[in-house]
Length: 138
Image 1 (cartoon, rainbow, N blue to C red):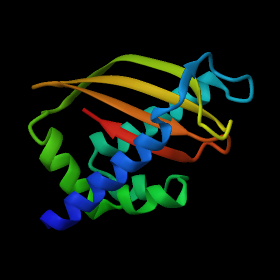
Image 2: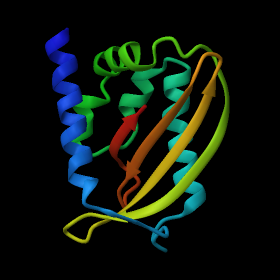
Image 3: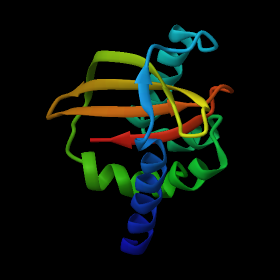
Image 4: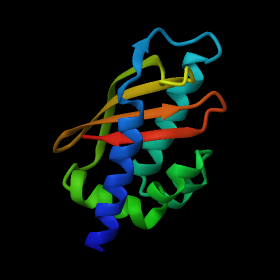
């Protein structure tokens, strides 16, 4: 189990490092801000209701399929936000654009969710096809 968690975290770090050189800018016109917000909330709602099977069925790039599969997510959530308690509300959802080193544009939804025992910040990246291209929580 520990090796699986380490593999998942390493994959998440590599994916985020790929976007680390990106610049945050205004959301490109090719994205619909409301659609990005709603898709981000849909991802988080799957987590909030422990519907990780539904989460794994959402559109995502190939690299994310291993990270967001139910077994992987269960381990990640237990380790990093296991004591969060019940979902209370979304505090803030910020949507910006970002461009990677190849010039590919992405939408980044940074969502702060309030729970009974803590706040969790979800950063979810979407490509032009609205597939999940990155996922990070703290």
